Image (tube, rainbow, N blue to C red; front, side, top):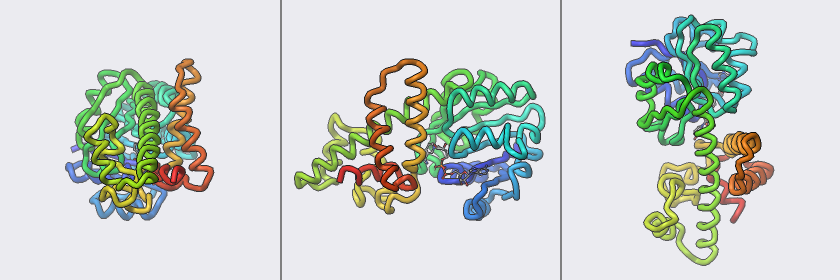
Amino acid sequence: MQTIGFIGLGNMGGPMAANLARAGYLVKAFDLSPDALAQAEAASCVVTQSAVEAVQGADVVISMLPAGNNVEGLYVSGPTPLFEEVKEGTLVIDCSTIEADMARSIAALATERGIDFMDAPVSGGVGGATAGTLSFIVGGTAGQFEKAKQILEGMGKNIFHAGDHGAGQVAKACNNMLLAVLMAGTCEALNMGIKNGLNPKVLSDIMKQSSGNNWALQVYNPVPGVMENVPASNDYQGGFQVDLMFKDLGLAMDLSQSSASPTPMGSAARGLFNLHKAQGNGALDFSSLIRLYS
Ligand code: NAD
């Protein structure tokens, strides 16, 4: 069985590493947060004192960090760049959502060193990470995709090859821009229903069976108490932070700008999440956007 070095054990990385350990891989796990390390240990990962220690002797390295600068620092420009620590032929899978250009440039540096680096951002939220049903959206060569597939199947259900390096990040930016638009629209509609006397659960059931049905209504209702086990019913803790959605909308706007693709809806959604963040809600789950309306 292969040894996996796993860096970044937050809301997503924690349950992903736990699923790999459950599948029988030896998972050497590292995070800057002691709490995250304690949870990983309870989930049968072998916790390490540093990222370098986690990747020593590993066949595969997986990272799940907040943003592009974290990923670039980890592998290339930080105090102990992991590309100088991993052995030749190592498969490095970055599952963080980062800039497509940055994923391409990190992949090019990896290739020079005989390391296989792929972008493999995910969709499916903390629920999907916990249940092992994530979608992986992979950018890399066909050979690298084949090499990674079995490991990704230990954490996800749908494994897509989007194209060459960076393509996974482009597809992910398109998806999350759409998600932001859908969540904003769902908050807007539910708030209007509530203000006009409707029960949000009844309204949600109606729209789920009607043409307004979407992912937010199905599995991520933003109104507290409508659904169990979603951030809205846990004071918007856990889940997908407003800060991260704001970052992803920035990535989408960069792609829009560089390709002159019109994105008026994405741009409006970015404005809403920016306002919500500016009001001090960056650390809350993104479904808390409904508070901006109510
Ligand atoms: P998070 O903030 O919960 O976790 C990130 C973890 O990385 C933290 O525990 C932090 O301590 C750790 N970390 C940061 N720098 C580090 C370093 N140099 N070395 C070791 N550990 C380090 O974030 P998350 O919600 O798990 O998201 C991770 C990535 O997944 C982001 O790019 C996000 O956009 C993406 N994503 C999140 C969701 C979601 O629903 N939360 C869904 C899809 C994709």
